[in-house]
Image 1: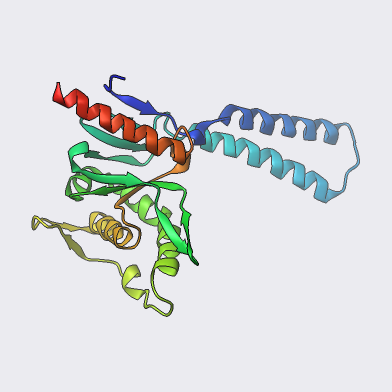
Image 2: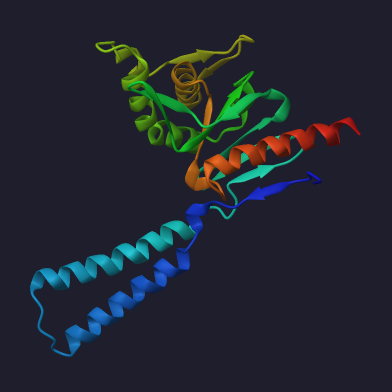
Amino acid sequence: MTLKELAIQPSARRDALTFCVFGVLVFAVTMFLFLSGFELPQAAWAIMYIASASLFLLGIAKLVEPPVSLMISPAQIRYEHRRGSWQFDWDNLIRFDIPRTHRGNELEELPYIGFRLKDIEPVLDTISPRLAVYLVSEQRHLLVAALRRELPPGSDYTPFYDIPTSYKTSSGKVYRGVQALFAVRCEQLRELLGYDLYVPASALDRPLDEFCPWLQEVQSHRHQVDQR
C-alpha cells in the first residue's frame, strides 16, 4: 500500500440522484392524478406534495455536499466541508478512535471519529470562520450528551455555555472571535470525551468500526514511507 493522497468520499452523498428522481416522479404522478380529476382527500394531496418536495430537497442537500470529505496524505489529514476546511499534520496527532460516553455501567459509541491533538493552534490558524461557527452549532448536541453522561448529577453546566472573549494557547498566542469560540469548544469536548476534533460517520466511506482500523493501517504505512 503506497500512501500518496487518499480521498474519502462521504456516504452522505450516496443515492443523491435517486432521491431527486423519486421526488420528481412523485410530483409528476401527483400532478397527473390532479389534472386527471382523480379524487383524493385534501390531506392526501398535501402529503404527496410534501413527500415529493422532501425527497427532492434531500437529494439536492446530498448533492451540494463536497465530493470528498477527507484528504489523507503522508503529511496531513484535511477535512473538507462546504463551509470550509480544517487540517492538521500527522505529527500533531496523539490518537484517534470512536468517542464513547457512559450510559449506566456501559459505554456507548457516538457516531463520530475523534482526533486528539498535541496542539490545536495549527487548526485554529487554518479553519475558516464559517466552518468554525457551523461546527460549534452542529456539535452542540454532542456537548449536551457529554455533559449529561460524563459529569456528576447536579453539576453546573453554565461555564460550558459562556461565550469566550479570547483564547490563549500554550504558546501564548491569543485568538478572538469565532476562533476563540471554536477553540474553547474543542477544549471542552477534549475534557469530556478525550478528543479535540470530530468527523461525523456520514462523512466517511465505510462504517466507523471499519474506518478506524483502516486509518490505523494507513498511519502505519505512512510511517514506513517516512522511514525510506
